[in-house]
Image 1 (spheres, one colour):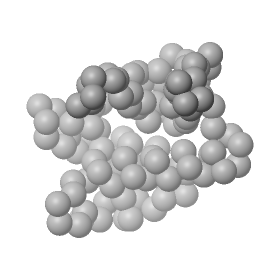
Image 2: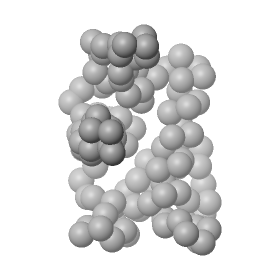
Image 3: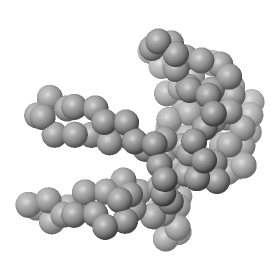
Length: 114
């Protein structure tokens, strides 16, 4: 799965939350265009992610629909990526990042699965 693009965001309790990009669905290559520019959805980046998700069974028209009130198009893309990862987990196809993950004090795996 490596290399991956990882964005670190601090959570209120000071721990790090990692968000793995959809590049795991792009032949392990970074997606060439961002999904947001200066905090605003960027159509070319969202279209690139849509085109990748079509390969996983989504229709372009579903991914291009107007999102519900309070949501943006990138939220729909994020939800679709999460659904693909959930299916990969169900079928034993998901892989952890990092591969040599650690466990926390409760025994939970500190990894992102994609």
